[in-house]
Image (cartoon, one colour):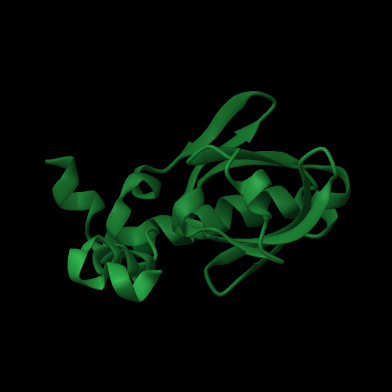
Amino acid sequence: MINDIIHQDSYKDLVSKQIEEVISYLLKNNKEFSITANLDALKFSPELPTSIKSQLAKFSLYILANYTFTTITVKNGFLSFEAGFGSENFGSTVTVPLYSIFQIIIDDSILYLNPIATVDKFNKDPKSKSLNIFKNNPKNQDLIK
Protein backbone atom coordinates (compact mmCIF):
# COMPACT_ATOMS: atom_id res chain seq x y z
CA MET A 1 0.00 0.00 0.00
CA ILE A 2 1.26 3.49 -0.83
CA ASN A 3 0.85 4.75 2.76
CA ASP A 4 3.36 2.12 3.89
CA ILE A 5 5.91 3.84 1.66
CA ILE A 6 5.13 7.56 1.94
CA HIS A 7 5.02 7.51 5.73
CA GLN A 8 8.60 6.19 6.01
CA ASP A 9 11.36 8.62 6.97
CA SER A 10 13.73 6.92 4.53
CA TYR A 11 11.36 7.59 1.63
CA LYS A 12 10.96 11.23 2.76
CA ASP A 13 14.77 11.55 2.67
CA LEU A 14 14.89 10.02 -0.82
CA VAL A 15 12.26 12.44 -2.12
CA SER A 16 14.07 15.41 -0.55
CA LYS A 17 17.25 14.47 -2.41
CA GLN A 18 15.33 14.10 -5.68
CA ILE A 19 13.68 17.50 -5.25
CA GLU A 20 17.03 19.10 -4.44
CA GLU A 21 18.53 17.61 -7.61
CA VAL A 22 15.62 18.81 -9.77
CA ILE A 23 15.78 22.34 -8.34
CA SER A 24 19.58 22.43 -8.66
CA TYR A 25 19.22 21.38 -12.30
CA LEU A 26 16.71 24.17 -12.94
CA LEU A 27 18.89 26.77 -11.22
CA LYS A 28 22.01 25.63 -13.07
CA ASN A 29 20.09 25.96 -16.35
CA ASN A 30 18.58 29.32 -15.35
CA LYS A 31 14.99 28.00 -15.69
CA GLU A 32 12.37 29.88 -13.69
CA PHE A 33 9.73 27.66 -12.11
CA SER A 34 6.87 27.57 -9.66
CA ILE A 35 6.14 25.35 -6.70
CA THR A 36 3.14 24.42 -4.67
CA ALA A 37 4.05 23.66 -1.08
CA ASN A 38 2.34 22.57 2.12
CA LEU A 39 1.73 25.78 4.06
CA ASP A 40 1.86 23.88 7.37
CA ALA A 41 5.61 23.31 6.96
CA LEU A 42 6.65 26.76 5.69
CA LYS A 43 8.36 29.46 7.72
CA PHE A 44 8.07 33.15 6.90
CA SER A 45 10.59 35.73 8.12
CA PRO A 46 9.23 38.15 9.05
CA GLU A 47 5.98 36.30 9.80
CA LEU A 48 3.17 37.21 7.45
CA PRO A 49 0.38 39.34 8.88
CA THR A 50 -2.70 37.26 9.71
CA SER A 51 -4.70 39.20 7.10
CA ILE A 52 -2.37 37.85 4.40
CA LYS A 53 -1.59 34.37 5.77
CA SER A 54 -5.27 33.57 6.25
CA GLN A 55 -5.77 34.06 2.51
CA LEU A 56 -3.20 31.39 1.57
CA ALA A 57 -4.41 27.93 0.62
CA LYS A 58 -2.96 24.85 2.35
CA PHE A 59 -1.11 24.10 -0.91
CA SER A 60 -0.21 27.56 -2.17
CA LEU A 61 1.48 28.41 -5.46
CA TYR A 62 4.78 30.32 -5.34
CA ILE A 63 6.09 31.67 -8.63
CA LEU A 64 9.88 31.73 -8.52
CA ALA A 65 10.63 34.22 -11.27
CA ASN A 66 12.37 37.56 -11.77
CA TYR A 67 13.68 39.00 -8.47
CA THR A 68 12.39 36.05 -6.44
CA PHE A 69 14.32 33.64 -8.69
CA THR A 70 17.57 35.50 -8.00
CA THR A 71 17.10 35.06 -4.22
CA ILE A 72 16.71 31.25 -4.26
CA THR A 73 19.02 29.21 -2.08
CA VAL A 74 18.97 25.47 -1.48
CA LYS A 75 20.80 24.35 1.65
CA ASN A 76 20.51 21.68 4.33
CA GLY A 77 17.24 20.28 2.98
CA PHE A 78 15.51 23.65 2.61
CA LEU A 79 14.60 25.97 -0.26
CA SER A 80 14.55 29.68 0.63
CA PHE A 81 13.49 32.69 -1.40
CA GLU A 82 12.30 36.25 -0.92
CA ALA A 83 8.78 37.14 -2.05
CA GLY A 84 6.15 39.83 -1.72
CA PHE A 85 2.66 38.99 -0.45
CA GLY A 86 -0.72 40.68 -0.65
CA SER A 87 -1.69 43.92 -2.31
CA GLU A 88 0.86 45.79 -0.19
CA ASN A 89 3.63 43.43 -1.43
CA PHE A 90 4.66 42.55 2.14
CA GLY A 91 8.23 41.23 1.90
CA SER A 92 9.20 37.98 3.58
CA THR A 93 11.79 35.25 3.22
CA VAL A 94 10.05 31.90 2.76
CA THR A 95 11.83 28.78 3.99
CA VAL A 96 10.45 25.53 2.60
CA PRO A 97 11.51 22.03 3.65
CA LEU A 98 12.18 20.25 0.36
CA TYR A 99 9.88 17.35 1.28
CA SER A 100 6.94 19.77 1.67
CA ILE A 101 7.10 20.82 -2.00
CA PHE A 102 4.08 19.17 -3.58
CA GLN A 103 4.71 20.18 -7.19
CA ILE A 104 7.42 21.73 -9.30
CA ILE A 105 5.84 23.45 -12.28
CA ILE A 106 7.28 24.88 -15.49
CA ASP A 107 5.11 26.69 -18.06
CA ASP A 108 1.85 25.40 -16.50
CA SER A 109 3.07 21.80 -16.68
CA ILE A 110 3.93 19.65 -13.69
CA LEU A 111 7.58 18.61 -13.80
CA TYR A 112 7.64 16.84 -10.41
CA LEU A 113 4.94 15.59 -8.05
CA ASN A 114 5.64 14.66 -4.43
CA PRO A 115 3.12 12.71 -2.31
CA ILE A 116 5.19 13.25 0.87
CA ALA A 117 3.96 16.86 0.97
CA THR A 118 0.51 15.54 1.95
CA VAL A 119 1.73 13.52 4.94
CA ASP A 120 0.81 15.45 8.09
CA LYS A 121 3.37 13.77 10.35
CA PHE A 122 6.18 15.34 8.31
CA ASN A 123 4.59 18.73 7.62
CA LYS A 124 2.80 19.72 10.82
CA ASP A 125 4.72 21.62 13.47
CA PRO A 126 4.76 19.32 16.54
CA LYS A 127 4.60 22.40 18.80
CA SER A 128 1.30 23.49 17.25
CA LYS A 129 -0.13 20.02 17.83
CA SER A 130 0.85 20.21 21.50
CA LEU A 131 -0.64 23.68 21.81
CA ASN A 132 -3.90 22.56 20.23
CA ILE A 133 -4.13 19.63 22.64
CA PHE A 134 -3.50 22.06 25.50
CA LYS A 135 -6.13 24.51 24.21
CA ASN A 136 -8.73 21.79 23.70
CA ASN A 137 -8.52 20.61 27.31
CA PRO A 138 -11.41 22.35 29.15
CA LYS A 139 -9.33 22.43 32.35
CA ASN A 140 -6.87 24.79 30.63
CA GLN A 141 -9.44 27.39 29.49
CA ASP A 142 -8.73 29.66 32.49
CA LEU A 143 -5.02 29.64 31.66
CA ILE A 144 -5.58 30.77 28.07
CA LYS A 145 -7.68 33.87 28.82
